[in-house]
Length: 215
Image 1 (cartoon, rainbow, N blue to C red):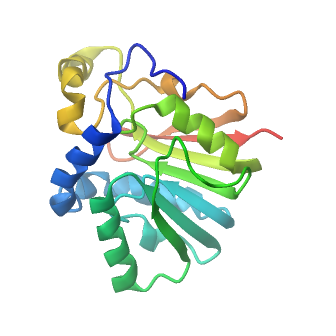
Image 2 (spheres, rainbow, N blue to C red):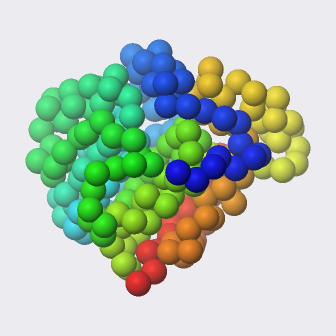
């Protein structure tokens, strides 16, 4: 596993699991509402593709109803509490294109190389203990020519927001995410070529980064 970049607040898997055990019961009505617009914009781009799709950090399954029928979706998450709600959502809505939901560490999956045509990661990269390791694992499991869509909050270098993000940074384990998280954190794999970086509505608080897996 690659070492966590020195500018990032440390997080570990047990801390993440504890944080999302607390958040799971009201996640959809709090963060889910805030992130809904960016999620739908990311889903619109995901639905431009077809084939096998992996959602890293599926959470409570907020994105699951938005995937088109041309996509066969596998979702993974570290938190059993979040996955339980994702399964309830899948069963309640009857989503035939959801192939599997599994508890799994995104930095060490059991998928074969080049298993997926598309990989989507929604709001998860600031949560995982080792973002670089997750990026390398994504690069391994996506097919050559496949796409990787990462929707996330990224920190800024100046202004009031930057000051707040730095002040919150030491409390990452309690919050369940890193407030300081520059985009360069994800630019670690020579196999993933950045295609676009697009601020998402409203306000550009979330950003969509799209990568293409090199042959």
